[in-house]
Length: 381
Ligand code: MG
Image 1: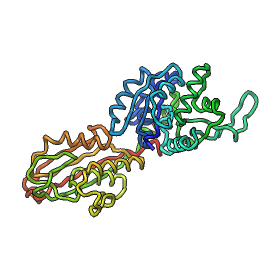
Image 2 (image 1 turned 180 degrees about the vertical axis):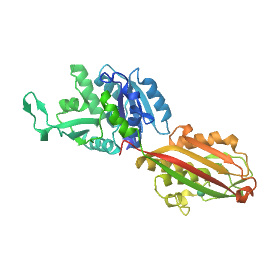
Image 3 (image 1 turned 90 degrees about the horizontal axis):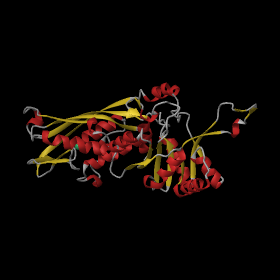
Image 4 (image 1 turned 60 degrees about the horizontal axis):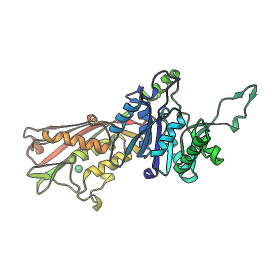
């Protein structure tokens, strides 16, 4: 799906009703813009354009750098004077068959709302998240028929070529529309709606802040534990955390026997209560013969994100008599962080010698023990 979809995150508004930049305001360690970005990444959208203002540019650049990952593109577009100008500028550099246009201030958006909107646009050309209206709406002294009313949210997803043509036409004809759906409907005569969510609120005024703080500020966290031991043997490479370490002995196993990565995998699976490494990657399966264990970690990371979890932090201790591991630890941390798509400061790797005690001390094996925390996706609760 990801190759066919570009998300456009609108972060170029003036926050006029807030009085300060609402998208860079932190809740529980992240900003509204970051929550929105994470929601799309967790929905499997890997091509993202953020329309920025001078007030949000630096933060968006920092997020793009922090979330950089292989096969992922996060680019910035210059915001315009109006929402429509910002969308148009972003559309010019979007590449997907479908674009999912989203107000970054709707930072509680769930994976499900995003996927519904995109699926409808892939099938029908448009998919706009919307909700039936619960309140009684008055216009002048007349009550509007509630069963005919829908409140449009975002994402609003469209075939890119069609929505770009609509915007180009609107600019030439001097037409302004409040959102993408109304413009699309005006040009093409119809628009498809998908199920929005009550939680998919827009952070708009100062009065909204306590609601968002209560929903995003106290996110549940889960803890995991994992442990792995591999026997040391001659004629094998010693690989820990994806880093090959020169030594006369290496670790024996069906895969590359990377005990650090295996312990990390078991820790993460444990925190999510998703079984263990053996259940996911059986050592009887020829597909995993000599495989680089970082590939298995990448698969686990994708599974966790699909289930609404992402790594909080991870702390591992390698118990090895020899060799000296300290020089290789920065590389190990970097490679694990790269695969887990998180900051390196969330990944800790330590090494200890067992002072000659036990099988590790006798150079029979290396053992790794690891704990981690997993943050539960707030947007999906
Ligand atoms: Mg193992």
